[in-house]
Image (cartoon, rainbow, N blue to C red; front, top):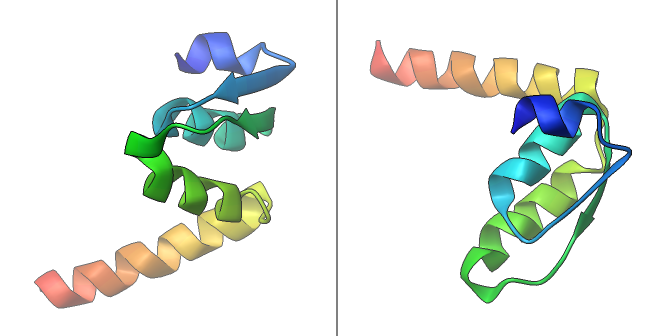
Length: 71
């Protein structure tokens, strides 16, 4: 999936993981409605507001907080 998405000009999906892969690769993303995935897709659309570096920074903070909890 990552290889296919990495060469796409745009990803149109109603699923979460192809959307994540699209954001990771910086590919234009269009999300269609799918009620069973609605909460995940809403979060994914919100994440589209951030660039790759901002997302990586947020992930680093989140993983560090998780590490503190489990230690």
